[in-house]
Image 1 (cartoon, helix red, strand yellow):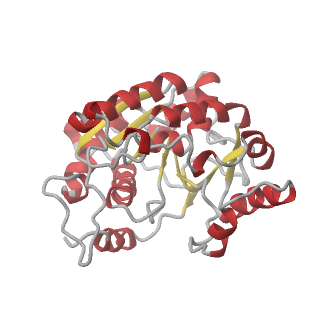
Image 2 (spheres, rainbow, N blue to C red):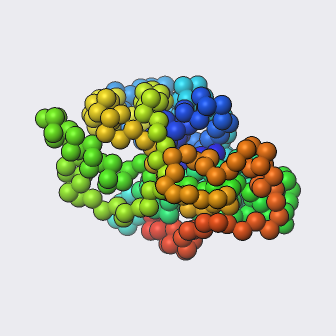
Image 3 (cartoon, one colour):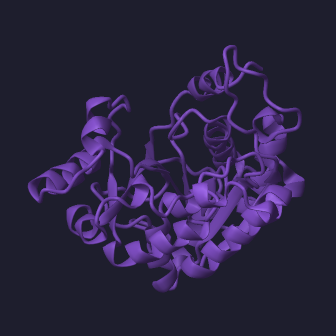
Length: 315
């Protein structure tokens, strides 16, 4: 199960991994916390499209359905409203009733219910930075961590289904310096113009512990098609697709993750998100076992993400 802030995030953050596992016969489930209702139209060719301007809500749902058909995952909407990206000085408050302004008990219960219904062995979400300081991305981390912590607790939200403890929790980590540096070096070596040099010069992201690299280069074309299905959010002539696709497959043939919590045996580095889980029957039995203790637990102090969320708006 992967938990994302908006439609299109599932296609830009781990879609090749999902395509691989779907074709390996695994059940892959995507949760979209919001509908992306307040997102800008980023494709300049569609910015004045009357249908999009009239009904962006349905357009973004249709785009998600198209990406879903390409990759093959199952999907649900968690049902919350996009918070938008507050801009200005000072920053405006969050819109009333948006995802990032909802009480944590409400958002946690909603995700706990989905976890208990879908019964995933692995949960993937964002790290405590959200990937970038958008209130919905940071809150996606907060809610995912909260739900992961209590989904297996019979005393937590007892009306939300039978307890089920996902056995591994990962952060998706595909935008890290090592990967960008490798692609940039290859492009320079082959005389290909690249914006990566400026990106590397201004790099501010902290170094992350990439523990798990999933080989999935043969599914990168599916990833690209899924992302292009989100036509309002992606400029097909933009920088995302500047790097030649063959070079991407050669230079970095994996999608990368950070293992944060595991109730199953851990042997690092990994090349499989299901590593250590054993058979489906063994993993199922472990997920309902009472009194589980994690083998690995590197969960950050939740206050850090809460503090970051507070800085994303004037609320």
